[in-house]
Image 1 (cartoon, rainbow over the protein chains, first blue to last red):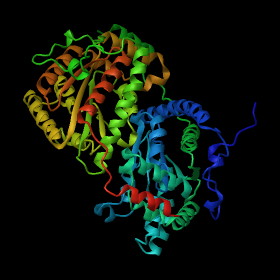
Image 2 (cartoon, chains in turn purple, brown; image 1 turned 135 degrees about the vertical axis):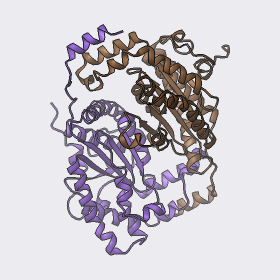
Image 3 (cartoon, chains in turn cyan, purple; image 1 turned 90 degrees about the vertical axis):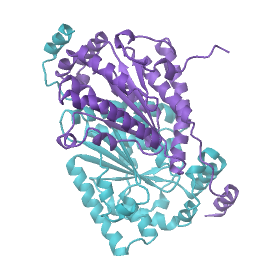
Image 4 (cartoon, chains in turn green, red; image 1 turned 60 degrees about the vertical axis):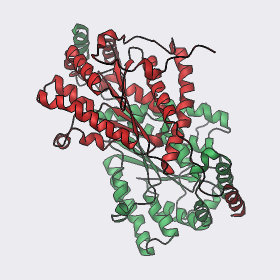
Length: 284
Length: 284
């Protein structure tokens, strides 16, 4: 047997205390596949690990055995791959048991409510795996960097987010938060690739460069959000995202480990199996 | 070149006039792959056909170029494969552009509203492919068979459904309705398979046999629904569903042909591409 491998949940958990994102290599591959081909094989295996347990999670919720759910929160700079993770990791999940929510610039109605109002409406129901494409963390990221609310307001949100996520945990919603960690060099390459490909122009927005110009401010805002809101009830993971195949493998592995920890079981029959077989054979 | 093949939309469209479901073979394979291996190869090809056009549909909606969407309605007796189609055909679609809605027994709140109330809330937004696992057709199927409302009421619904679907068509929502047509023999085999497999017991409900006992009534209710609600704005297709691989191929092909008919285009850049490349290269 090979020596025990550190789990993804241990490897990628944000370090405690002050978070120095510059010290985490966006192109790092501390565990797992070393190249794209190995990652493809690993993804096929993850597909099996995720599929069986997600079916059991869904089945146990349908049968009323515990209202457990998973909420995977995806955050990251433009081009870090939130959409790619939804396509490639979300694609491993039976669509019936998957709920995607994308949080774009808030509408006037959303702004008129507490910042968690639109988030609460999208919490996955029992048995469902939810994927958040951006989230309530925007309210301590862009909102802070662009000074959209006073500092006292956004600072107070760390604690309110922790209270909200603790509430989810108590309800049985297992929260997994992934920061897709990309380098500014990789972002430049991806923006140029979008500009080279006419079928990708719709993904490009000149305003993205204004955000890019505030890179250092965003990294500082992320570092604080990760530091203040990494809890055992709702941990933060930093996912090296400069290589797309590695990023997808890490998030899929975090999901597989999370489902394995929940260990959902298919509910037992609440009827007499043999009697029902006889009924089926007799009918029609 | 081979002779032109009839499209799935022509082949599986419900015949006009009185519908005789008994005359349509649930194990038929009038076009397309002749075995499971050929179907697997065909599905890989369909994946490409669907993927590029679904991305373009989504992109054009994001860019505000026309609010088009697709709504695939799945109806069929228990075990006919609604869930299987969602897994295998829904799985071909990027989850970001997919919306699934399952219509189960109505809640008291839903019953207190018009039968289309809960349906309208789930109509796919611009650029999205919606999949309905059951639908408003339950309101002329189980509701009719079990006499849940007076005959005059359910009879009036055909026209209201047609008006609703014409409205969707005008809004740009392309409606594709599939009846998954299974034989009672195939249903018995699948129910027994569920009973043999403890990980499938949760899908079995002894009440399913009460529905099965009303097979003839249900076929009559389906025949009338298909006859009265097959319109050019929202056609009905009868999908042979005794073979799972053939059923999935037919629905995927109907979806591919629908997307090809819509022919969505990636929106052109609304910015100066070369100038933006220079900005990206200059920044950071």
